[in-house]
Length: 258
Image 1: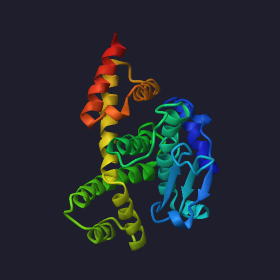
Image 2: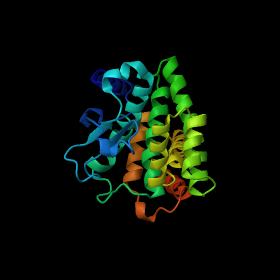
Image 3: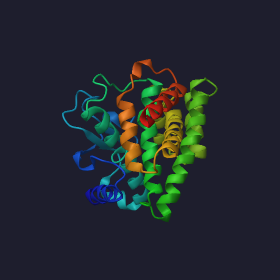
């Protein structure tokens, strides 16, 4: 795992698409039994959100010794949970003092920003040429799976299907075993609309980026710096919907052009 971590950091610095890569610390811990029902595979947790933690922790539920047996999935999980996904995002907004009272909650906007960035990070690594042919296919499949999960989430939250029916759908159409399917639907129940947020914010970031490239030169590092600067100026409590975020970005771009 350390080899993969080192390789991804080196690649990102070589491509010069994100800053502060070396400032993010690496700490792995096997998921405790009491958390495995909500962490079926892996999850990154920041100490400023989870007050019981003394360090930022990447919990892994799978056996790290066997990661070579499913290396493509592991690399994708690393990118989503750690760099340039959740760990990088949390570093930019928490360690750089964005939103002093930022807390992980059931808020759709919170989930939208957090999970959507991680999905964007997966596709970003594909865009800049990090993946081989197998990895490219894996990421595209995962994006399609998240679209399916979004539909499942809507059905579950609007009471069109119940918990057991949702579990059965995951087992039938998305090759989940029963234990993993129950864990996943439990997570959907604890954090309503979470699965929907992945693809919606991913799409929104891509939309925002396209607008930026039309106004400025096509430079990923410049876009990402401006993107996090934009987020740092948001008053999260006043944001009511996705359209408002897009409106605020358009306003930001207008001021940037002056």
